[in-house]
Structures are given as structure tokens and as C-alpha cells.
Amino acid sequence: MRVIAPHSTFDLLRLRVASGVGPVIARRLLEHFGSVSRALEASVHELQALERVGPALARKIKAGLQQSAGEAEKQMLSAERLGLTVIGIGEPGYPPLLGALPDAPLVLVCAGQLERAEPTWRVAIVGSRKCTPYGIEQTERFSAALASSGMCIVSGGARGIDTSAHRAAIRVGGQTVVVMGCGHEHTYPPENADLFAKAVDAGGAVVSEFTPNTPPSQENFPARNRIISGLSLGVLVVEAPLRSGALITARVAVEEHAREVMALPGRVDSPASAGSLDLIRSGGAAMVTEPNHVLEALETAARLQHAGTHPTFFDATAQFPDVAAPRRTDPTKPRFDPTTLNPVQRQIVDTLTEPASVEDIARTTGLEAHRIRAEVTMLELRRIVERRGNVLALVAKAGGSASP
Image 1 (spheres, rainbow, N blue to C red):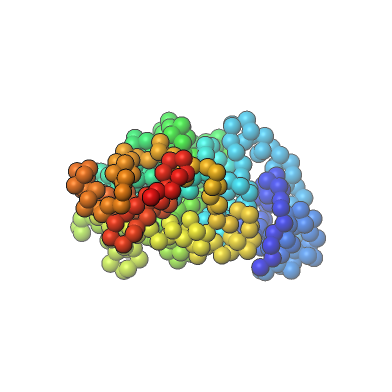
Image 2 (spheres, one colour):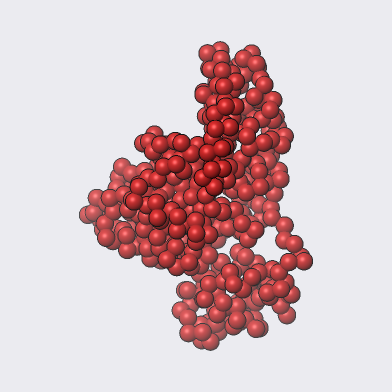
């Protein structure tokens, strides 16, 4: 696969707004011509060399590309006016896991901070808009626990399960990412405007692949769902009927994105949980009943992401080597900042003045063993703690010094 040359966000936005150019065709253009500028200059005859592009579509694409500069400039100015960041695929700040997908968005329009210097592990929580009190209760339980453990919660900002997931993460001081099915000039649903603002204020983000003036539309939501999955290491379905957008997200996650899919069981006679139960019965999702089950299911995927060897990184490395390469640790910087640990993680780290087992930590802190194991998983992924046989030991202390 050809390596794509450096490109500008503006040129990528031109591809995004050009009539006749969707994410898949845009990716083909970039791969075939090797640069955005070359793709923008391609003739109708050259465009016909693309897979599944005939003369009529080639002419439509060419006309769209020629007319796209004015619209792209208009949307860039709108984003600047709203205080948004436009991030092009392959650029610093564009999530590598998402960028590796064959239909990854060319640009993301973002309020808040999507990528950070510290590695970010995301899990999507999805479910029905018409959820039950049980669904809300369990969503808040799982979202709060996972966010407290350091996971970033991703959802679609919709009524019901999505809203509960975002709110619970914010309530415990965690990070959450809202993926919208419209542009930032609109809020859907309207009553969530304050929630979205709080997500940004809490260190999370509100993101969309759509230009700021794009209104909410039913046809936008399947596209939004692929971004929810693409940003995340795995997808947790809390409560979903047989016909549900959450099930579409789950299917895309497992079949197209190589993601972990988990589902929470509900009442066997409840239509609200029929889709979730069918996922579990068919083997399409792992059943989880505790938040630490989610952490255990995502542990391998998180390690692969940290090492840059998650399955979807292979395509990303071929196309965008600078972005897809694993993060390097700067030895001159602290290995971790104690202020980024949650209270339970801090208790564990403070206890490990010398190597200790989970049982030793439990006796010292009074914490339950399953909670310690869940938090240790996050500490291991951040290279703060490592296993040495049956005991745990600090890899490094604040300030970067190695533990004994």
C-alpha cells in the first residue's frame, strides 16, 4: 500500500465536502494518488482508474473537487468562530485506532481535547434511547466504575443509555467523549447542551465528522456509530432491543473493527434487553456482570494499543507512519503523575513500597481483591506496576526513578 505524503487539513476538508466523495472513495483517492493535492488535481480520466468509479461518477467527483474550496473555507471559518479544532487524518491529535479504519473520517471537528500525552484507553457504552430504570442504573454503575479506573467513556450523546453513560463519567471526575450525528452548530438532543459542555469542561471532548452546519438527520447516525466503535478498544451494550442502533454499533465493532464486544444481561422477558441477550446467546458478545469484567476483556487490546500492535494499526502504519507509530516515553520526564491516579490506585501505589501480592494489598488497605485486580490492570497498562511472579511491584515512581 502506497505511503501518503503529508497533507493539509484544509485540503482534507475539501475532500470531505466535495460532492460525490465519501470516506471510502476519499481513502481510495489518497491511496491511489499518494497525496491530497495530487488527488485534488486529478483529471476525469485519472479518476476513472479508481476501483468502482465509472465515467459518470468520475465527472461528479471532479466537479465536486473543483467547487470544494469555497465551502471548505466557509466551514473552517465557522469552526474557528465556535472555538473548534479541525483535525485531519494522519495528523497529530487524530486517534490512531480510528485512523486505521478503511472508512475513517477524513477530518474530525472537535470541542475539547480528544488525544493526550498520556495514553488514553476508551470504552464505548451504548444502548437504547427507550431504556428502563434497570438500564439507567447499570449504565451509571459501569460508567462510573470504568471512568474512575481511568477509562474514557465514549457514547453518542443520545437520550437514554448514552446520556446516562456520559453523566456518570463526569460525576466521578472521569473523561467522556460525545460523538455527535450532526455538526457543532446544532445540539441533538437539545436538552443535552449543558451535558456536552460539561463533558468538555471535565477534560473530555465532543466530536463530529460532520461540518459545523450539518443538521441532525437519521441517515447520519449509522456513520456516527462507526466512529464510536472506531475510537474504542471495545463496546459495552447495556440494554438494547432486537432492533437497535446499539446492535449496529456492536456488529460493526466485532465484524469490521476487530473490537471486543460485551453485553450486560437483562430480564429474559424484557423487550428492552432482547437484543443484548441475543448477542450473548449467539456468541456475538461476552457476558459481563461487573465493571472489572470489562477491564479484563480489554486488557489485551489495551496492551496492543500501547505497543502499537493492535490489529488495526497495520493499515494505519502503512498509510500514516508518523501517527500510527507507538508513543515513545521520554526518559527525562516523570513516568507518571500521582495526581492522575484515582484514590484506589493511589492506595495501591502507596502500599507497594516493596513487592506485595493482591492479598497483601487487600489486608493493608481493606480493599476488596476484585477491585484491586481491576485497578492493577490499569496501573499495569500505564507501566506503573508490573507483575513479578505472584507479587506486584512498582515499575517507576513519580519523577521517573525506578523502584527497587
